[in-house]
Length: 168
Ligand code: HEM
Image 1: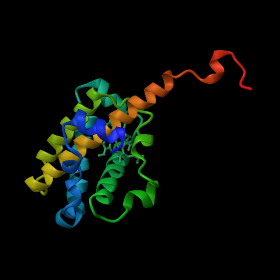
Image 2: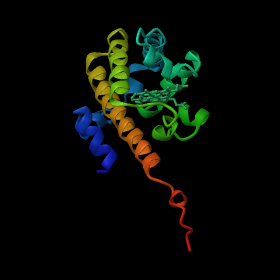
Image 3: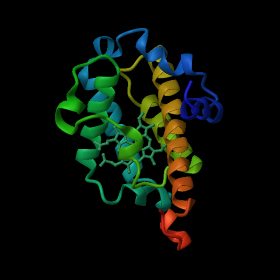
Image 4: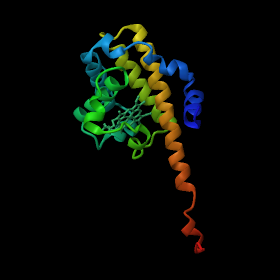
């Protein structure tokens, strides 16, 4: 298991096997496209209305409708549907795509809070699928936090040129 996956399991409290239980059933076949559209719409409606300005502002440079599409296309692709995300956006590379944003433990908890509420208000997703999806989201959120911490560590490592010594 990679260090990032290990940290993701430890911090999220979700064992890797539970996180990837989304692969046991084809959730796209089970739920259909509209359920994913509804989930991401519910999620981003909450995010863009968040009373917590520090969290809302992380999304300030994104257009809500595009953020909704980016998210549901990724979920559809990851949960057994057609590769809509990759066809339009390229490789998911989630850590790299989150690089501009402060993906802290606090931000992960706020993201997950909105996602739990979005799931609760999406009636076309059954309870078993909700549990599977939430485990995947929780694990992935902390995988991104682990990736973000790596980015911060790398920034603290001085560049070899910063020593003033010339390399041979
Ligand atoms: C942990 C807290 C998280 C924060 C603060 C965060 C923040 C963001 C922001 C600001 C964007 C840009 C919105 C856009 O224009 O599409 C974004 C995009 C995205 N996020 Fe997150 N995110 C988090 C967790 C997650 C998780 C857990 C997943 C997947 C399970 C995820 C998947 C995505 C995807 C697929 C995109 C679209 C990327 C693209 O199309 O370039 N994010 N996220």
